[in-house]
Image (cartoon, rainbow, N blue to C red; front, side, top):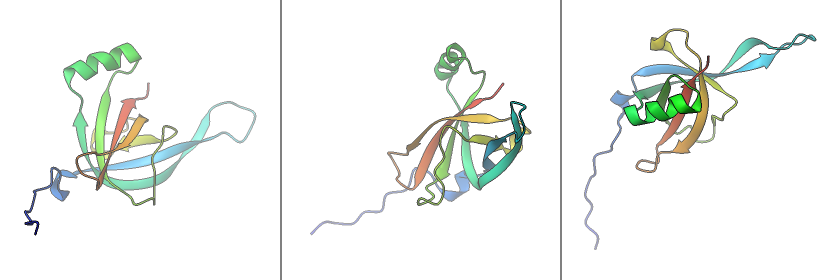
Length: 120
């Protein structure tokens, strides 16, 4: 018989302390190019982490000034972020971050890892 041992999760609910919003921009209706308004798709609590210095140097070579790693709870298919979405972190002001990659957290299946870069 297999003995049950409780393993403490790596991330917990109290780590999700920043409110973020995922949104996408809607193109202008007229002949003018550009985007007119933003539609909020999903709002949730997240754990926002800055990247390491080595990743920061790599981000500068890729053309972004600031990258963040955002950990959110798995939505169960209710919302799936992709690279066409933008993210705003409420505590960072009105900065817009473009979603670069989305992947499940391999250590804990209850979370999703989203890497975002600052939109200039």
